[in-house]
Image 1 (cartoon, rainbow, N blue to C red):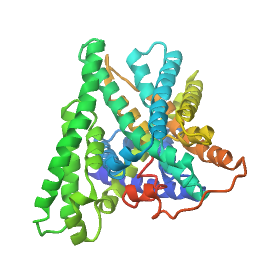
Image 2 (tube, helix red, strand yellow; image 1 turned 30 degrees about the horizontal axis):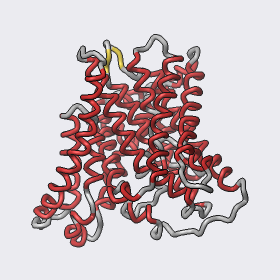
Image 3 (cartoon, helix red, strand yellow; image 1 turned 60 degrees about the vertical axis):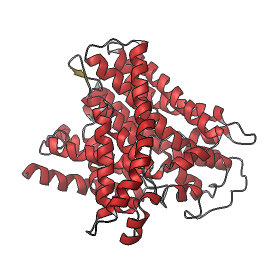
Image 4 (cartoon, helix red, strand yellow; image 1 turned 90 degrees about the vertical axis):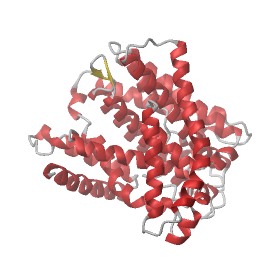
Length: 434
């Protein structure tokens, strides 16, 4: 327990300090957590190796994985099924294009820079580029009083759909690699089975969950002990995550589905009795566990690999593919008079899911080697950080270049996105950066 307790103290302190520094310079806290993790994980380059265990300690790794499960559960709670049905055709087309284009661009970049790697590695790298971090974009829209513009509505709506599509892509790619690791050939029929399994789990899980959830929480409301709502919420989340793992999918897929299913109407009796909703109660465990994941992700970035020939070029090309791939989203805008440039730039930032994909790939083994090695993992983390840093100034420039009158400002509580996501601030870096 000694190294674990000391590691937790160091990681949480680093997360708080790094998050504070990032927020003070106008960036999301998650970038500060990643940066502090990179600092801690590379102290060996200056001769200090006392914190090298952080990136490899199995207990800290388990805590980080639980944090990821809770993170995707929280994202699911904020991505309501009703909101997904309400978004327009432009959001659907933009989200779809914003998943397909970066996927194939990332695949091509990986194939060019990693010619000796397996084609499965190239495919997985493409999957890491599919995610969109809309939390930063939403904050820019709010700061410039443009939350009522068609561009803002399209980007925020597309982000909800992007969550689902990105997780399905991850589940499919992971399933293909797992099957290949077991000796199964990459055949159209095999891919079809994996696609059906991933979509079937999401659709079937949602249908079953919609029947189970209200009955489960009605029974829970009969209990009189403290903490019933959070306890049963976590039970629901962990059971779905376990079911996804059993089905051969990533646990985060199940956690997201669990959050997507749960609505306040399912547990309103408990919420009224305890005086808060499930999203609020989830803040406490997430505040501890989620930063562990980001600091450890940063600690696993080996800055020494950038001295190797071609690695910086790979990271730069991957970042360029991530930026250009999302510009295709503008082609999905069907309405007239809407800035396609603003929509494309608003979809640039990457966030948690890109890092989660990389961490999953680092644990997948193919032919005795990890699918995502140190070079690829480091390049993906750099891509996430650069796209998150460059998106706000680019979006501000696109919104203000015409000197048009800003849209009527709405307070966060009046904004439909805020209401649909349980009253959360869209700028929260640990709530909606997917």
